[in-house]
Image (cartoon, rainbow, N blue to C red; front, top):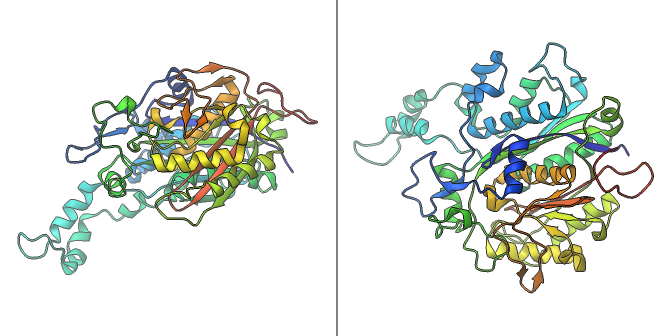
Length: 447
């Protein structure tokens, strides 16, 4: 089986645009959760979220593609920005940067996870107003909608909101013609997409792939859905830096955000031959499904644990080899309890010895953008640093958690990044320092 390494990391997040800015802010404990500014949230119980800093999408695409940005929803923009960062960090020259790309486009895949992209309400509002029923009523006349309302939407309107458009724009901009797929499994989307790209390269169907996910839930429809499910913290609008508290039994709910994390995976020998920087090696992946409920994870954590256990088996590692775990950690008390049960099942006595670093208190829950978690895992290996776990207690449900409010320098041999989603999908990735040609793990990334 061919070895697969990470040679590019691309991040767009509430605590920084670009992997370097993200990592610097993450390790410094910076929190990107704040009062919502993208729209008027005064009517919502939860008025805070993790917003990406202001950007101009035209700065992340070739001049020849500027018109294409007109049919990009915010989720698509986030994926395009993360892809630009990933390509640049990998030192790969695509058609976006040169007339002579430095790779075989037919061997370059693309797997990007996406969420349910919410429409911009101002577009729909004007169209639906035109299609009102009787004067002054709040009914919709289908006859008027077909005759007049739809005419208010641009012919390409729907192309902004199809989940596959994230991968579509990235592949067109960079000229990628290898295996491509879109996965929409809520917060598990990005990890499942990375796992599929991993297997594609292992099997020899591609030599390199860009993979991960992006999503924005900082919009009225995104908030309404989560509020109706009672998942949001509506009590801490005045202290957003403390609003999301993973594994705290007193946690009041989660906070949503927006962002994207994309990795460039490459076959090891090819990466080595071109002198690429190798951030980490992807050595294990597994997924599982529970059949509990659509809106919450299975309480015992059985299926979640299976994903972690099987990813470790895939990596030929045990809990003794793991120095860091980046859990899902949503700050929803019952969900965190189920996740903690899964971590106990999978890691046993090792759990209290493995550093646990939660990302979401600093970024918000990013949905399909949880590829940012995978990027944090890779960067931890590359920088020999354990990111902090702010707002997380040292003991939860009688289990000691190895957490620290500040970053710690330490050689990181291997990291588990695990997620679960509404609907019951679970996924786990294992990244390690570059393994020697024989067996065992080196203490730092490198050849």
